[in-house]
Length: 57
Image 1 (spheres, helix red, strand yellow):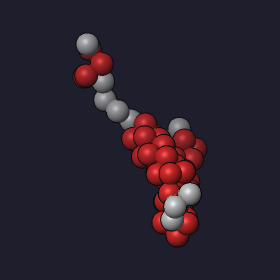
Image 2 (cartoon, helix red, strand yellow):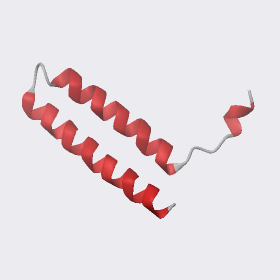
Image 3 (cartoon, one colour):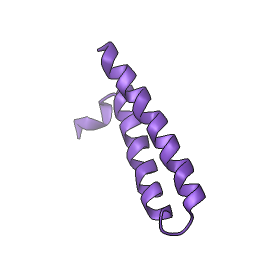
């Protein structure tokens, strides 16, 4: 109940975005290779952002 007041960190937001992109990438990999490659590239960019944030901590 009190979790609704919990502030979501930037790393958590990026993690959720990364997981969504990887799920989309996996679904598209069987049907549309070009779109799946775009999703994978976006996911990798998010991953590098997460790594940079974690290095600062």
